[in-house]
Length: 433
Ligand SMILES: [Ca+2]
Ligand SMILES: [Ca+2]
Ligand SMILES: [Ca+2]
Image 1: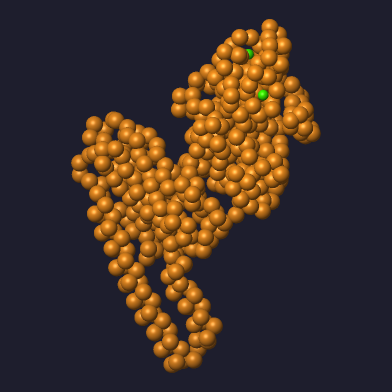
Image 2 (image 1 turned 180 degrees about the vertical axis):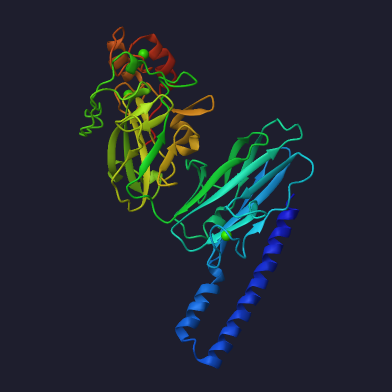
């Protein structure tokens, strides 16, 4: 199965050599031309050399895709000084051979909006250096019954990724939500349905986004019913019109308030925080650069006070931006990956995978296919323990309102809060550094 891969590497080596020969030839012509006419100054010659010769600035990464039945494929993305973005194809871009005549087969390709046959790229080179770049990856599974999905694993070498100088290289959903930090991790597995190409973005960036517009998704365990989050605090009129994070431990003094709750889909207030650090483990409270209270909708979207807009911040990061989501009685979560951006929006989905959450399986709970913030922290000290049960829940049991002991967020403090939420998390603690 690796045979074609080796052939390809060989092919690429051969091509590199011919490119080098062309370059040498071109340089000789330039030198000859210079000596004949004298019109080419030394500066021009240097420019020509810089433009065409620095093969050490060429980098690429092979993505290998495989599934348990042994079907495999690969595609390569990279950068070179003499490569170009978009149409037409450059000397590095290569199109894929046609799909096999008979299924099952797995296909992976890049798409840089170049006309056929380059609409299915096996090698997609872009101009390098640059400050920001997005590659469009597709993976398609064609089973023999045209129906059965399969797990597909994408693997790559971090050493190949780290030959480029982008500070972040993230494998993301087609909406730009990070799935893997390609500089640190070397694999990503997902369930691939039959026939429908699954689209990803590989986003490479030299700098964290300034003044980010943040499209956040996060799910709270307490109100989550397996399909959506209940909005009973809202429909029963318990939600405050002013942000509820002014008390300890948050001591957030923001003036966010609304004349009325802007949408029937609002579940509760959350506090969104940005931290500027090199890595998630270094993103301590001391690295906090911004906070903002926002509304969580029942589908997991975090929105501004109008109930619709993404949350936006005015910050100029020095390192990378990491996101913390705070909730009154759930354990806070920190993004494991730095923010990147696509079409001007920085997406982050805390419910996609435990890998996107700092602390992983110790930081969020899995319910079905979703990862959710753990509830039951009634006194908001970052730990779920007897104090939350005895000093908060028990004292409020039997009452209704906007209460810390209401772990299910339905407006009532009763046995469900203890049995359905607190019990499952007793002993858990916040994984924030
Ligand atoms: Ca290209
Ligand atoms: Ca607690
Ligand atoms: Ca409740």
